[in-house]
Length: 460
Image (cartoon, rainbow, N blue to C red; front, side, top):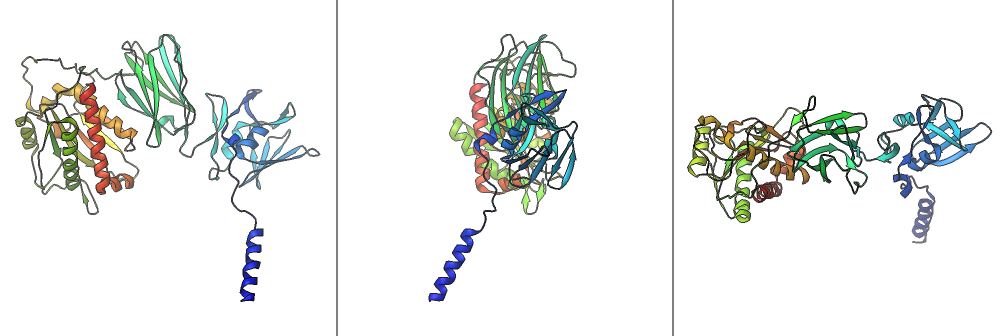
C-alpha cells in the first residue's frame, strides 16, 4: 500500500513539473490593428507591433543588431540593414532592407506572406484600405465599408480578402444586398456622406460571410461590382455605368392578399430527380411540402394545397392546371439540386425574367392575351421580390450562399400567378445533405421559407 502511494506521489510530481506544451492565449492587444507607414515607397510595420500581433517574446542583440521574435510556434530573426529574415531555419528575401526608425526596427509588410498559415493564431494580413495590419479570421476578414461620393458616382469600398467571390443577391433600391465572404471585424460607421446615393447601410452575419443591405436613392440607375486586391468596390450612378447592371424593378407597394397557395413538390413516380445514396429528390420535396403547408396556413391564415400528396408522376401541364384551377395567389415549386463538385452548395431561386418587365398595376388588370407557356411572366416583378425575400432570409439564417436567377423555369410554365422554383439545397454538398435528410432540418427549412413568404406578403 505504501509503495502504491509513493508511486502516485512521484507521478504527480513528474506531471506537475512537465512544461506546458500549449501555446499561450493571445493577449487582448493581439487583436488591435497596427498602423502601416510608408518608408521610401514601401509599406513597413514596426517590429514591436509585429511582436504584439504574433504574441511573441522579443530578444534584442545590440552587438549584431539582430532581433529575435519567439512566437508560440515559430521563431523569426530580423537583422537591421539587411533585406533578409530567418523563419526558424529558412531564409526569406524581403523587397527592401529592415531599417531602424525612432529606435525601432521597421519590417516590410511583404514579410507577412511568408509567415506560417497553419499557426494556432490568426493570420496577419495587410488591410490596404485602412492602412493597417490586422489579425484576420481563418475564413478571411471583412472591414467596415467606406462610402465615397465623387463625380456623380457613389462608391462603397469594402476591405476584404475574397472580393472576387462577392455576389449581389438582392438588387432593388429599397433592399440592395451583397454577400462578401469572411467575418466582419469592425463596427460600421455612424454616418453617411451627404449627396450620395446610399441612404442607409447595415450589416448582418451570413453563412461564412457578411451580408450588407443598402437602401438606395430612387435616382440610382445602374450599379457594378469592382473586385480588387484587398477590397470590393460597389459603384452606384444616376446614369449607365460601363459594364454596369440595372436594378430590379420596384414591385407593387402594399401587402399581398394570399387566400390560396399551391405547393408543387418536384418530380415523383418514376422520376426520382436528384439522387444521392438512399436520398431521392422526389421524397425530400414531398416531405418538405408537407411541413411547409401547415406553417403557411398557420402564419398567413390561407388555404394551402399540394399538386401531389403522394409518390406519383405529374406532367407540367397537370401541375399548372391544378394551380390555375385553384386560382392560386402564389405558387412555390420545391426542388433539390445536385452537382458533380461537393463544394457546390446553397439555395437557388428561379423566376420569370423581371429586369425588363414593368411592375404590375394594382387593381383590375386589362385583358391581355399571353401564350400559355408565358403566363407567369405577367407576375415577374412580384415573383422576383418574393424570391429575394425568401432567399435573403435563408442566406441570413445559414442556408447560403443563395442566388436568384431570372430565367423562366419549367416548373412555372403555364402558371398564372406569382411564383418561384426553389432549389432548397444541394444533395452532393455534405452540409446541405445532412440538413435535408434530417426531419429537424426540413422543419427548420419549412419555417424559414414561411418566414420569407410572410415578409413578402406584408411588405409587398
